[in-house]
Amino acid sequence: MPFGRGKPNYLNDALTLLPGWTREGEGIRRTLPIDDSQHAALTERVKVVADALHLRPEISRHADQTEIRVGHETVPLTEGEVLLAARIEDAYRAVTEP
Image (cartoon, rainbow, N blue to C red; front, side, top):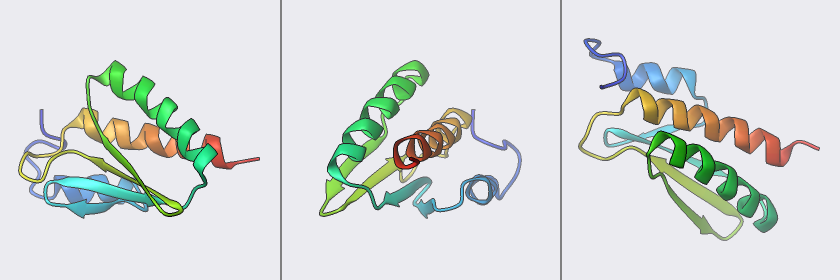
């Protein structure tokens, strides 16, 4: 079910709730400045949540940054994908806070 069904700005609503995420087609993207060990820890945490939600975010590593994409370029964002992005934020905080 599309997030905020019936609302023309559902993707904008999701972005309001998820600071740091940017629109990419109908999906969303986040770039995180983390080191290799934080990337490994984040990836493991995201995998657990993504498996539980039956979703597959794209996670890639470039230089000192991790890039995460949730959703698709042409398919509307779902509530589950917005939930996954929120859980990724939780995981990011968990691996970067002392």
